[in-house]
Image 1 (spheres, rainbow, N blue to C red):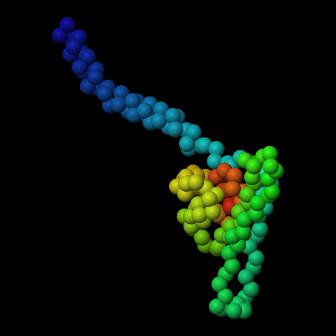
Image 2: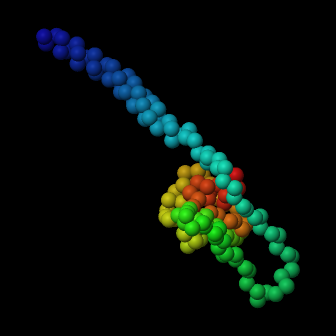
Image 3: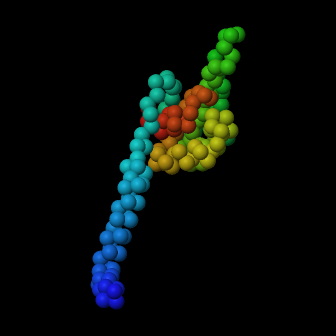
Length: 160
């Protein structure tokens, strides 16, 4: 029995390095395989059949006629007249204007103020997940209040 234990001890002592290397490789391989969906996940936004109006920003004239005049920001609301039977499905469009160089945080605040999104953090996280934080285009947009975050992102990044 003592001879067996000595042989086992010698075997473990001689081959522990190889066992540890194999264990580390298996562990790393298991973690990579387990998290493969994050590395190669689908970040495409679903295409929507919803018709959405977007307006490109107009070119600024080289000369400003009145330096005291402030830039106009459109903030009009348009409501379709609902029928008396169905008042729950009111489509309300909100016009927003995004200036050149606006940050994603500023855009999120604007959308939150217009009640187009309920949570700025969720909007910013979704932008980050899709790697589109810097892809928001300036311009005038008409958004439906019932649009989900992905649809709004699609419109603002011109991914439609």
